[in-house]
Length: 88
Image (tube, rainbow, N blue to C red; front, side):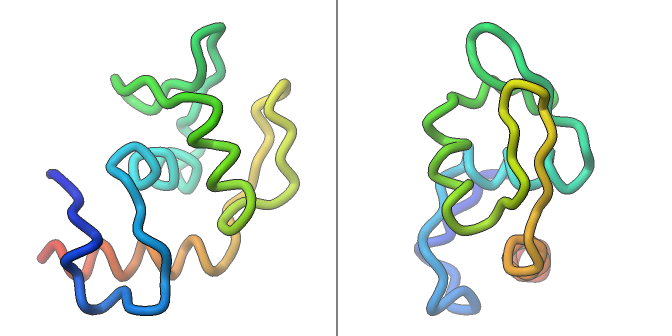
């Protein structure tokens, strides 16, 4: 499913997220984001380190990219819920 968050009215007040950012947030919420030399893998999608660094500022906490330990903030969970609701 393609995420076009700039068109979703329910996310006013939140930043626009790219497809890669949404995929990375979902993977972090599920605990399925894995580190590789190229970046991070979320399912079959390669996510760049810069994408994760952008998410760090607003949606992640306790990140340690070298050991793959990161948590998603309540704000990040809220955004994921809104995305899921808008996709229905």
